[in-house]
Length: 217
Image 1: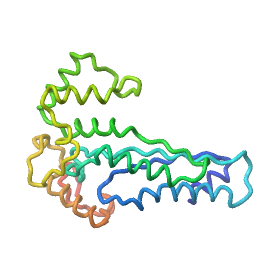
Image 2: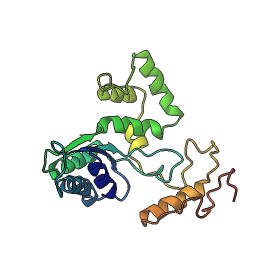
Image 3: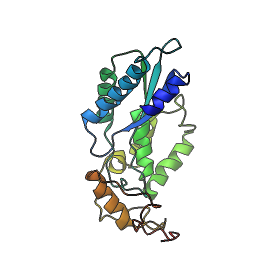
Image 4: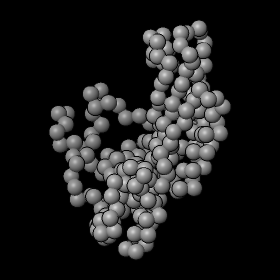
């Protein structure tokens, strides 16, 4: 709020904030909290008389995609229905046109989740996509969710297995043969700490024994 106040005092009247939904342990209260924070910023603008025609606060919310080599690589991604429910919940929690709400297409997030935790079996789907002329999927006008699901079905791929499944810590991961310098044990400890809301100190403050081969400590 202090940073927002300084921006407004400096003549700014628009802000854009970035969030993510679908994170592990997320609650509906957390989602509504995004709208509450945006409203607090709007209120801050009008708390004193400022120059300008008004304020606009944009909130941009992407969907959580579990990524390899992170403490949340074992976590399931929300289903499409759950993503859309949360998006609707946030949209209905906004009560002013001073707040603009933009969100990532849940279908795109699902495809990202599939390939983020994919293994060599997905190569058949990729090859088929190339043969079918699938191109530029990062652009909304070219993305075709139904086409991707048809490709997965044709090549025997269950997309939910990759995106929406909680992976046991003891399971061998497809990317485990790659050494990134940080140990699997450390990532598991970080995941468990996240469940408890515990913060890991910055490396410059205290070494957490992550296993990084270039760590000077």
